[in-house]
Amino acid sequence: MPRAERERQMMGVAEEIFAERGYAAVSMDEIAERCGVSKPMIYEYFGSKEGLLVACIRAARADLSKCTLEAVAGAGSVEEALRRGLVAFFDFTDTHRRSWSLMLRNEAALAGPVAIAEVEEARREQVELDITLFAAFVPDKPRTELEMLAQILVGACERLSLWYVNQSEVTAAQAADMLMSVLWSGVAGDIPPG
Image 1 (spheres, rainbow, N blue to C red):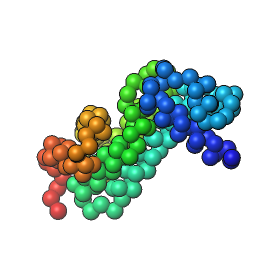
Image 2 (tube, rainbow, N blue to C red):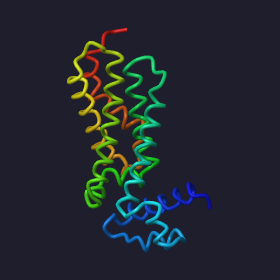
Image 3 (spheres, helix red, strand yellow):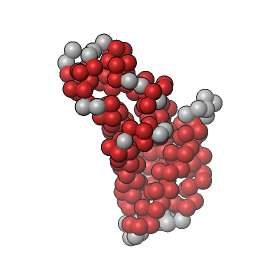
Image 4 (spheres, rainbow, N blue to C red):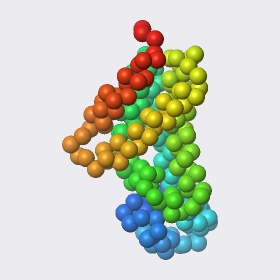
């Protein structure tokens, strides 16, 4: 099996086990056994159990960034871009439940500072995306105000997603609509009409 494919396989298995039982309860022996590889091979690829968790979080972060960027591309208004981005975010949390749970639960804190930094980097990327989005429509707004708005949006998305992923009767669009109804009036007050 090519290295990249083997790496993805190990990350997929680790993500599954970490999400099922939690980072602290999982051993590298168990991951190696489920993957059908030796424990030294996992160490060769990732360096440590924390390195394996960081690789899982990094891959989820890249997927989240890609899907939100693709969703907002070509939007004609900040309202449309924000809604598209929110739907993409909730779709991501729904379709990537295992990786999302690794990012939001305390798995990173249990693993160590590198994993914590990786989760914070995912948040920072989403904040920067939101700042860029808002600045495109209100270029004269001070960056500090745009950043406050983006931080509120990212925090609200995280909290709602913790609830949302356990609700089978709520769709990604409904979660996005609820958040839009709460946040849009604050955003729209600064957006020139048209």
